Image 1 (cartoon, helix red, strand yellow):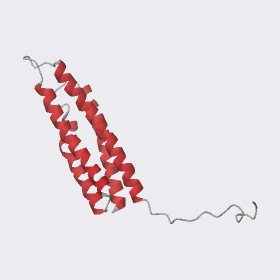
Image 2 (image 1 turned 90 degrees about the vertical axis):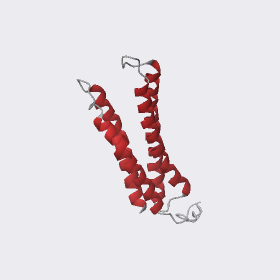
Image 3 (image 1 turned 30 degrees about the vertical axis):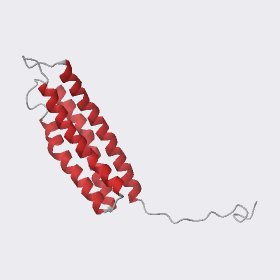
Image 4 (image 1 turned 135 degrees about the horizontal axis):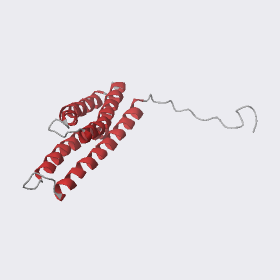
Length: 151
């Protein structure tokens, strides 16, 4: 189960990284339309939350330490904040539907929150990898006088 935890958390990291690609695809799609960010939205609203839950479940089944299990819940919370920031950014428009300073700032926070989420997932992958390593037996080092017969 520990290996599964590493694999699922790594897949989550890859999907989070792909989110930046999907956002760029939406930003550079011409002409801009409602479907420009479809892949980014679908991944953020369905795939990432499902993988977050699967990562937490795999941590629980692997009997990871409580702190690591709690850490696996953080990306799901940050994903919920992402959705809120995206909605708020769209809500702060002027009467003609154009961007406002507040809307752009909130949109910028959406990107910053995404970066934070990626860093959290990197920490989870690292911790899961350490947790999955087999325990090494403690070996008492030999003194230098007995190794090779030289002092």
